[in-house]
Length: 414
View 1 (cartoon, one colour):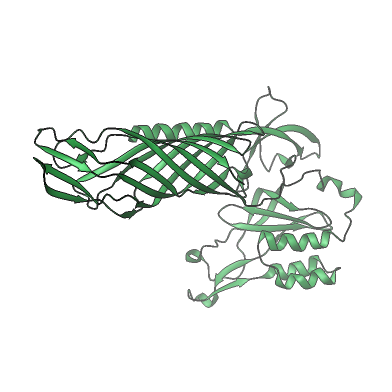
View 2: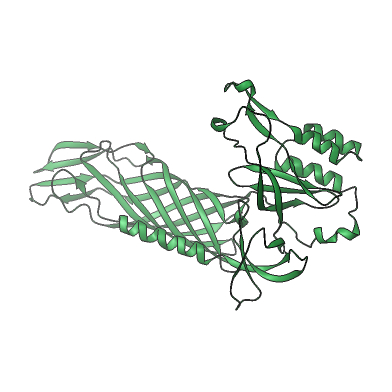
């Protein structure tokens, strides 16, 4: 099983890496020369340290850094500019705050993501910290200053340096309405974006500054939701009572399952990641089952058995084209709940039941699953899923692990 899981994970990582595509974009070098290129779009959740690009499909890859590229953009996706200047890298983690309210500036050469553009531009930098920057009339980029620190050195008193609010008031000094809104601005992408857009919507940018306004349309990053009906078949391995009477186990079985999956598409990395939860009903056996121990003296018997599992997991999508995609996922079972009448696994001798092993009514955080599948047009899907063994008995010893492979069809309701 360990070798199977390792091989599966290696295969998944290979698919993820191979699926990254070169997309149409441009670069502007330090001599202000713009070149149309193909850029490897990794859907960066954090700002990239460098990028890979090439002039055409058959060309060799070239690595670009903030020192060699002034600006780059991927059409219909995102735009980044180089910044060489001060950055406050003070940690935001409460356990590592300093006692000083002053930013700890260091000279940095990084790519900043353009969040909004116009008469006033807003940029962001996200790594282990999140920092925002702006540019205005002078076209130079400046940091918006915000810092958490321990007030008077007391680790129970956390204060913030909100100098960015005064900076915003100065940036928007020619618009009293927007300037007043700056008092309530939070140091977040949503809050700052709203403020800059309110200002830029009133001010027409200088026609001589068109280089800062390439036709780059950032896709609005919204959380999307899918609800999918997922019927399928479970292929069960023999269910064997272990650490007890030696036996071959109840024979392998094939039975149905039905699930309803809720999928939350996360608004980063080009919507390739999602959270999934799928309450699922599975039938193992609908009749009493028995097996004879290897010594031929005892029988092990169990009534019909069915269960509901509630796995929570993550999924990664890999797009083949506009309508087709492959996905991989991994989940952990939050709950397993027995729904059948079976309450014990019985040990019989010559027709007489002399021992009963209690079957668990429910258990939590037992078992996990790993799947790979194909989705067409975000409507129809098929998935193969490996489910790790789960002990159905109430006690750890003896134990009876139910393990199975699932073949699942999906129909997205919305």
